[in-house]
Amino acid sequence: MSAREPALGSRIAARLSGGLVQFVLVVVGLFWLMPTVGLLLSSLRAPGDIAESGWWTVFTAPAQLTWENYQGVLEDGAITGSLLSTVAITVPATVLVIVIGSLAGYAFAWLEFPGRDWWFVLVVALLAVPVQVALVPVSELFGWVGLFETTAGVVLFHVAFGLPFAVFLMRNFFAQIPKELMEAARLDGAGEVRLFTRVVLPLGGPAIASLGIFQFLWVWNDMLVALVFADSDSPPVTVALQQQVRQFGNNIDILAPGAFLSMIIPLAVFFAFQRQFVSGLMSGAVK
Image (cartoon, rainbow, N blue to C red; front, top):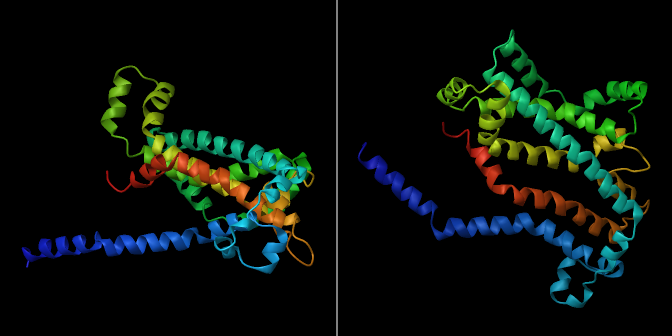
């Protein structure tokens, strides 16, 4: 039986790597991309064409495609200003979570201090706290300290709720660094700061890239926190697009190009760090 098992496993692996599986994966990928393609083509059609027919009609009538919608969006100060507001919120919230999460993850992984394991259990428990629970008390706190409807308040909220996952991820990744490597660096006279910056951070690049992508996407696509805490005069793009919805219909000539533009930056960030993202996800599979 043991001699037949490898042969059976080899046959199954060979069949799974065949052309049929690859064809199925291509079909699934095309279906997955269909909403994005539909949004892009809709954003390139005039409002009258959108009202009369579906986006797939551009394949038989390519003359429908026009850049007028994008020109209108770029000339709309509310949309362009909301994109800048989103960048002003997302970049600091991502950088702060990476920096603080990396420092805390290193401390939990390699520093000895009283109650370290219990503190880490508390951090993990915070992962289960839903955002909705904190909206009312944090609103009252921000109103008392003057951070309500400010960019700084939105950034602080995202940092606070992003840190538990960041600490959990970075601690688990840093803990996999060989102990012999850390001890050798200490024997060479490296202090904790130099050890963290010269040894741990370079090895933690894949995990940092994964954390950055997760945090960036969460903050960029957030709408609930932005609706509650963001400045109504300079809302992020998710809120600005929601405000474009009319009472008796959708302002599709603004919503479609605006939504597609809001997708470009997250997609660019993801594909720019795709290799590091995959390495970070796979780093915990083997040790």
